[in-house]
Length: 227
Image (cartoon, rainbow, N blue to C red; front, side, top):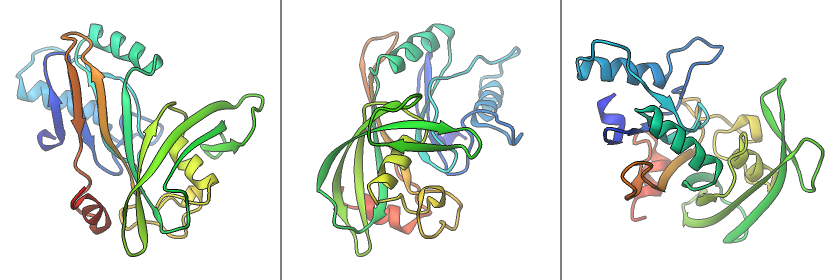
């Protein structure tokens, strides 16, 4: 667990999540990062009582990258409000098949969650029950068969990046749910929460954190080289 911690102080902790890890418990009953981190802190700091830890935002289980947890209730309430106010800048990396797509593009869609199959339905026009989803991507590297996109997320909708890229004909590598032709060996997808930038909720200093990509994936390693 310790090697996954990329930032920590008295108020918050940022984890570089691995593919397949749950950020918090769900109906599968699998141990979540929330519980794992609590147990780790309790043991590391020899805490006699319960450890307070609050999840500030989520990323999908097959996704890797940065997740913020709050270590105090004050930090949790302030960070949660910052997420609502879009005061936390989130940058993602995604690997897609090499296609003829614009070098940079702003995507605006409207997403509605289908609870039955846990999938986002994408609309190109405002639709009842659908929420506006906005992102901007830029192609920052080209490999033999794939491209690396850097994505700035303006809104935080369910499966937003996965659904919007799929709608444009560029599903993320390994993302069978959204149209990729084949799965990845580890069952994950090549979507990585690469960077977070925000004002610390207590100290007010500017925080910028970058997460290394999964090193067990050759495509990711090739993407990171020289970028």
